[in-house]
Structure formats: structure tokens, C-alpha cells
Length: 614
Image 1: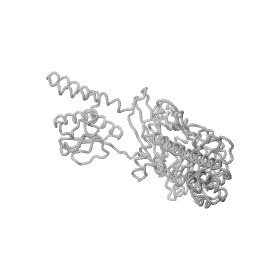
Image 2: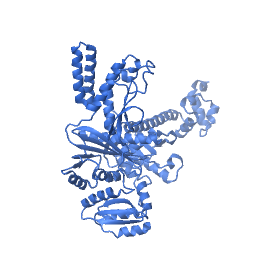
Image 3: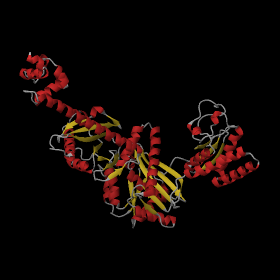
Image 4: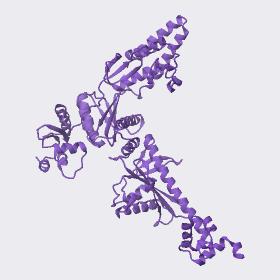
């Protein structure tokens, strides 16, 4: 069937809940979805002009036929969709693969062994512990053991690298025993390695019990040096173990989920808390979509209803789901008792959601660095996600108003392209239609003039449409500009204000709806937005001071008889300063365009009174 025929068939569907099954020309199922209203949902796939992301576009291109199963409720549609996807594993439904596989603890070869976390088991003669299903748990175990027993984690090889170079920072702060100095005995080192391996195998309680017994035995033998070493190891383990896990105030069983988007796709990060402790972390990267909301809606049912994951009592998500209550009901039935899905807005759980988001951003950053996406690109991706933009901004324009004491104002416009200042795009404005000091009206005038230049087909920077507009100001400036841009070419350009605190530091972003977005927790975005606000303020203040200086110079010239504002302006444009005018000869003054001989004579006599008296 053609796309038009599929659309006509979809328009004949009922406005009832159900599941739709899309097949290709080989009758293979390529996508399964659920809908509250089958006609509305399915017809959107095949209607001309409806935008879709890369995955859906490709699926539609291969679609040849579809069937539907009408259900009596949205809940039945959700459960049926999950079971059908599990049975058929359609090509264009998301595949929940976190590409981690199994992980191992590797205990190196030779006398001076090192303990590392590995994703593959190699045939290299080393000893491997595992496999473990959680790479996060393996990395945590290895890091804890190395810190507790002060084992080296550097790339140096021993004994080849003894006394070659200075000890690293870990040795100076006591996290490494400093094997590279060549002062550590082999027996002492091997004892530490064996202790670390025992801790990984047996856990904290058993290794502490063993070490305490050995410490007491050493003390009874009067081997106080050995006893002191064991005492320090015990203290190190007791100190480091609590710090290696994020612990909540209660012992609830909870998953925390957050999503981050970038130019290359979307990442879902899941932090799993069991008995109040962070027990595992999982990340899923999806390259075929850029819509976080769409992925969030599709991801959670797939993840929990597929049967491969234990369903916790509580699930904290970074944003509400469209069918959240229905999903909670389905999960409750599968678990056997009530499951709560919610979005924390404050407190410890909100910070845990932020922690999950940071992990998702970091995973995308690692993935993008492998793909050649630079740091600036990752920062723009994070900024776009924080501001709710689907695509990262390529061109950012920022505006600031600067006032004079006499009630007149100027404005500065700066441009950031791909995260970096574009000085050639900077522009200056003199406020023309606003009388007195009115920042709101002045900002509205500047943006209206900027948009008008674009709509007239201007060249250069004015001929470019920005992807993001940032105003130095709050709700008032944003509201005034939003009104000025209505029904213009810039109406749909994302618009935000940058608010400062009482110490004149960037505090938050203000949306076009007047809501504030805190940015202090997003260190990279905070620094980036602050740099933009500082730069636009510097540029507008600099322009205001230059204009004020020229105005002051011009006023000193207009005091001369026969010299008006136009003549003063012509002189300053030609000589650039009053000092240069003072030093000019009468002939040079006469050569200035716009200055007649009489005015030139008056100016020369003003600055050379002794010569005129002669």
C-alpha cells in the first residue's frame, strides 16, 4: 500500500484505545505501538507534512500494511503492547541494550600485580574474578579496594619504573603507597594485593574481621610496625567504604531515571537504590531519536514490562509521563504490590534525579567524543536540554541595554557561534523611540529593529536567524520582547532572560512564560551562560562609555561660537579626538568636509588665543 492509502485506512479507524502493528512488504512486523485513540495516533504517521525523527521516518518509509487490535481500556493496550513487543521484537521499537555485557576484576601477572576492572576476559595469564552483570559494581569494588589498600592505579610498570620520575599526586595525598619510589618491600606489596582481593571476594565485614585478628596477633608478637600497618588498613577501609556509595536517608527500594539529549541521540540513565544504597547504574544510548519526551514515554514500559528487570517499589523520573497512572497500575500488578511513579521537585530525591541526569550527560559526552564532537558541542547540547530545546543552538544572540544619566540609552548585541564569541557579528544600537529610561521598551525596540532588518533581507549578521536569544534581564524584558516579536520571523525563536543575584552574578534563566530555571547545579551551562551575560554587559557598557565620551567631546566643541552639533560631529569623525582638533592647523581645519572657513577660523582662534592676539 502507498503512504496515501495507509493514511486513508488510518482515517477509518475508531477513536478507541488499542494496539497497532505495522508490517513491511515482506509481512514482517517492524513496529508495535499503543494508542488512546487509534485513528489519531496511526494517521499521524502517514499524514503529509507531519515532522518525525530519523527512526520514525525510516519506519514509515518501509511501512506497507498495518493491523490494529482494539482494547477496552488504555491499561489493556499498554499490557498488550508490552507482550507483543516481547514476542516479536520489532526492528523499530527501542532495543534495551546498554552494550555493557559482563565485567571482570583482573588481577595482573608478575610479582607487582595490579587490580583493574575489565569488560573482557583475555587469555593473558592473569587471574580474573567474575563475570559480574554490573559494570558499575565492579568499578566500585576495584576502586574501593585499591584506595583502602593504597595500591597504585597508574600506568607505570614495576619494577621497571622504580625511581623513574616523581611520585604522583595519589602518593602525596596518601591514596597510594608510592611503589614507584622503590622503597616498598615486595612482601609488603603482595600482602596488600592479597588483602584487596580478599575484600573483593569476601566483602567488608569479613576482611575487617581478618585484619583485626592479624593486627592483634602482630601486637602479641611485639611486631608493632606490622600492627600499625594493619591498623591503618582497617581505618582506610572503614573510612572509604561509606564514601563509595550514595546513601539515602531511608532504606527504600527505588530506581531514579533521567534523560539527556545531544546532537547524536538521547541517553537514559538509571540509578538503582536497594536498602537505601546505590547498588547499580545502567545507561542506554539511542542514536535514532532526538525527542526526549517520546523516548521517555516509550522507554519505561519497555524497560520494566519486558520481564528482564526487577520492578522497585518507587520510580523517580525527571519528568511526568503521559500515561503515568496506567503504567504504575501495570507495574503494580506485575510486582504484586503497589508501585509509585513520581517526579520529585525538591529535596534529596530531586538531587538524585539530577545525579542521574549528570550521568546521562557524561555518557553522551563520552560517546560524542568518540564520534569527534568537541567540548563546545557537548556544552551546547547540555544547554539545549536544560532549556527544553530539541536541537542545540548554532547561533546565539544576546542583548543588553545601557543607560546614560540624562535618560538616553544604547544597546549592545553580541553573537556566539558554535559556543564561541563571533566578534564580527557584534552590533550597536542607539535607542530612538523611547523617551527617558525604560529598559523594557528599549529592549523591545532593539529586537523589533533587529527582526525588521532580517525580514528586509539584510546581509551579514542581520541576515542570519538566531537559534536562541538571551536577554540581560528578567521577566519584564522577556515579556516586552515576546510581545514585540509576535507575528514576526523571530516569533518561534527560543527566548530567555538572564537574571543576576544581588551580587551581580548570574542566578537563573527566565522562560518566556516567566518561570525561572536554576542553572547553578549545571556547572558547564552556568559558566557558559555567565560568560555570555558578562560579555554582552561589557560590550554595551563599552559602547555607552564611548558614546558618552564623544558626546562630552562634542559639547566642548559646540561651546565655540559658530560650531554646532553637525560641525562638531564632522570634526570628531575626521580627527577622532578634541586633542587632535586642538593641534590641527588652520589649513587642516578648512579641509574637513562640513566645516566652512569661518568656523575653521573660530576653532583655530579658540585653541590658539595668543596667536590671534598678535
